[in-house]
Length: 210
Image 1 (tube, rainbow, N blue to C red):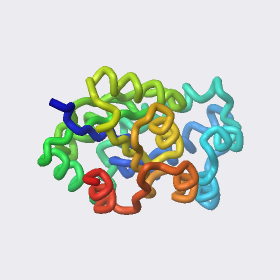
Image 2 (tube, helix red, strand yellow):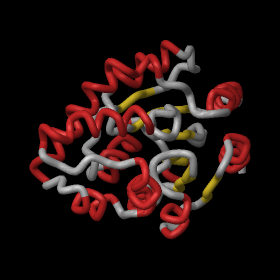
Image 3 (cartoon, rainbow, N blue to C red):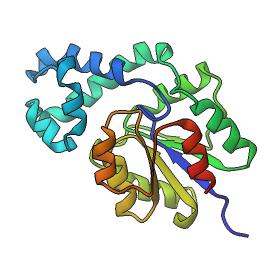
């Protein structure tokens, strides 16, 4: 028998509508790490920048990045139950579960935050949750996750909202559906030529079904 089809989701900006909370947590920690805060007027331009260029633009040195990610994760722990599910995504998860599709999460956010969010919103149970992935180590983590879960890459779709999600999936030969409602600008996602680029949950459902 062929392995079951599987969909692996990113979390922040894909399932969880957490962009505003992440931005607030970043700006809260920015003075302590001596990095530039993000002004709301700069947000669209920031979303268009490649991730490494964005870090340089805001003065985030490589050695500061783990400290920044840890601080934002910790801040999100306090806020995670106030974050909403992205519009229509609950219906997509329900539909996939009903069809017997294995749904998992692979994210930079912490496993604890993801599981608390899912339980609070009573989302369908995920077959696996892998949190704490390095911000620029997603390709390696995704490849390892696929192998550990015994998945067939030809039957896996990775769903994410950032340029680095598209890059990670493409680099290991997994199809990526990029969603435009998260952290990266639609034009930046399109430039990376994902397998599918969608603007609504109904489009996401159709893309996965196809």
